Each structure stands twice: as C-alpha cells, then as structure tokens.
Amino acid sequence: MTAHTPAPASSGATPAHPAPAPAWLARHEHFLLDLDGTLIRENEPMEGAADLLHRLDGRYVVVSNNSTDTAQGLSRRLARLGLRISPDKLVLAGQLTIDFLASSRPRARLQLLGSIALRRYARRQGCVLVEQSPDLVVLALDKRFTYAKLSAAANAVAGGAELVATNGDLHHPAPGDARVPETGTLLHAVAACAGIAPTLVVGKPENMLFAEGLRRLGARPEDTLVIGDNPATDAQGAARLGMRYLLLGRGPEADSISPAALLALDHAGHVQAPAQAAANLNIA
Image 1 (tube, helix red, strand yellow):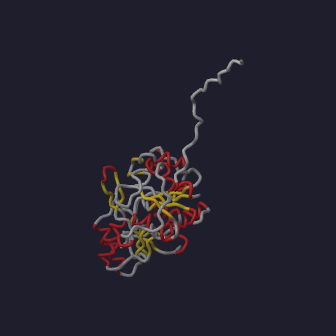
Image 2 (tube, rainbow, N blue to C red):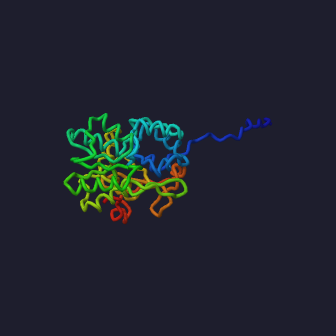
Image 3 (cartoon, rainbow, N blue to C red):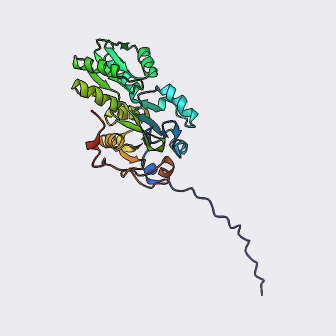
C-alpha cells in the first residue's frame, strides 16, 4: 500500500485582481471637467479631486466659466492646492472671450469690466481698452464692481455699444455651501438697467468652451463625458452637443457628492439634461 503524500500547503493568498472600471470611465475615451463645484470650492480642493485627475491623466481638459484668471495663473493657484493641471488643459471663459474678440474684432474699443489679470491679458492680445465711448462692453467677474461702473456700462449699452458676457452664471459654490456671486449677477444688473440683452455669452452652456475642449483633446462628442455640478450649464451644454454627463453636488440632480464618490459610481452617464435645466439657464 502506497503512502499518501500530502499536497503542499497553500499560502492562503488570493491573486490580486484590480477592480473593474466604473461604467462611465470604461465607456468614454475623453472627459471635459468643470472646475468650481467639481474639483474645487473656492480655495479648497474637493475630496478625491487629485485622484480623479490622476485616473483621467492624458484624457481630460477642464472647461470652466472662470472669467477671473488666465490659464497660467490658475495653473499655479491649483498647484498650491495639490492639483497639478497644466495651462494647456485649462479652457477658461474669460480668456476665451478675449481670444475670440481679439481675433474677430481686432480694432474694437472694449470697455472691459473684469479682473486685473484679465485686463492685462487683453492688452497683451492687442485689445484696445477704453473707459468711454466703447464699441463693446465686455463683462467678466469684476470683484471691484461699483455703482459707477454699473452706470457707465449700462449707459454705454443703452447708447449703442454691444454687450458681451464671458458667462451667465449667477454664482458658484464655496465651502460650507456658501455662494460666491458670479458674472451673471452683474450681467443681470447691466442688462436690466440698459433694457438690452447681451449679443454674445461665451461660457457654458453655449458651445464655444465645449468645442475648444473637444478640439484640444482631438475628441468626438459621442466619446466624451462631461463631469460638472450645474444642471443649467454643464448638463444642458453637454446634452446640446450629444455628450453624456454626470453631476456632482448635493442637489436632487446630483449623481455623486464628490470626486472621491464618483470614482466608485457605476453609471454610464446621462443623455438628456434634467427637465428644469432649460428653464433655469443662468443667462440674462
């Protein structure tokens, strides 16, 4: 009778298998990310923002209605928050507005209400900035906005100048669910006083920012997911161009509370904007 030879003892270790990619990540080749309320809240990074950027490295561009910063300056500010995003991955409404006007209206006289950084950028692009008798009143987020500026801008528009806005957002989120007044709030004041709507609004949900983001990625809308927080800008703009989207935040339309939670969300993305998005566009 032959003695039984025991099998070698098992180590008990289970081969490691990486978790499958969530449906939204597996389905899309490229991603357009919002900034405020999606990656940061004012000067605080959101939970998991750095991990999300790492996971999407080489496949994303940030498209933001930010009209305060230039891409170079914002890239440096984000780096101090631990979010490393190169300037070429930042498509900003303020900067894109200036680029568009410098190209399409090179000799126009601009009354630009905006940050020092944006005004300096406009001059570098060859724009003619004036305080009186403008051809265009260009409204960005101006944290030094005053009654005198409101009066000058409204009267210029009432007198025949075109009104151009970088974006129509009424506010963006800050820590503690506070609201930071945005360009759209100032736009409503100027347009209401002048009695004239803007001839051009560059930012989301309009197409220009999304189109530039897609161009930089070399991407097709059907292969691209928009990740944002605003149903009226991110969701509505994505749906208009045939892109799927997911929303972050605490509102009823939100899919996830943070970038960290998004990385565990197995959802392919929405095709149609929320029912109220079209009715709640923050555009004068």
